Image (cartoon, rainbow, N blue to C red; front, side, top):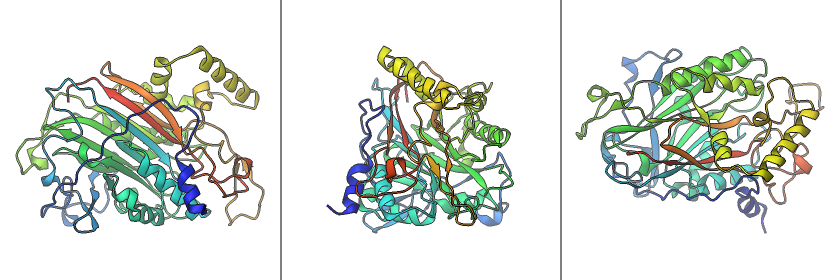
Length: 434
């Protein structure tokens, strides 16, 4: 069997943390009109060249148009009032939506075509309602959009160009190596009702790294905001804990803004929005890059929006003595291997990073060729606003199987993986009137 086929076959397999999930059905594309975006962005001449921190600029999503055989902007005017994949407010149906965060590692200079194929397969076949991708390079973005399976998967996808424009200087470089990277959001088209929008906010950055930004999505159905997401790839430098906290707060400021309700008229615009008291369900997900578990306290203790770790909610719901014993045994072993202060059990296990590629390959610009060991930790996470109307039904990791026939000297047991991270998938049941 060819290597490319094997890579596709094995990309989505994983044996850990895999409760049964229910994929979201694909939606039908809407006919475009002359308008060209979800909430058409303000013309360049009317806006500053770059927003300040905590300011969120309008961006857009694009979808595959089969008739035109090209990617086009999602037309806000063509969106239905009620999102097709969400039940009407009068219904007693409890929708289940899945969220995925995945650091693709595609901006690395060592990234291969086999890894691109594996990533594209995992993403296209995921069935998740929302997907947050980090470290997306321009070549991989073009590769993903060119895949027939992805074009047919029913996703509307944000653009890296807007991310790079907002993130500011330094963004063309991935630290000291590799291609520039972006955060990209994928949303099932059928979840977008009229009034839905995507925004990009600039984050503070470290002196030794490129520009940073976050992507926010507001989902409307029936003229009401029902769901709000924010995602980013936060500062990766180990000593930047205080910077990461500020970056977290920027995302929290977006999530905690007063909700807006749209009118049901065909000509919905920003001027027709009115503030209401209703709060949407909020989700924060991404690669948090924390150095220790204590850094996540700022997310769970925020006075305006105290979020809850989806893994903790799932563990509390499906707790078993056998899993508890295994988790404690693994955590004890990790502590004996040198876990530092603030490295709680939930920070170390189950890991999403550091175990597939235990060694860091030095950049080609450095004289040394000796790889360094990575710190195994759970830094890819999904946080949800606490509510009795939200139940976490599933939690799993994907992308943890080696690609058949591919090797990498820095990979676990010499194997090559789709990424140096695992994808985290969380399925949530909403017991709420949409």
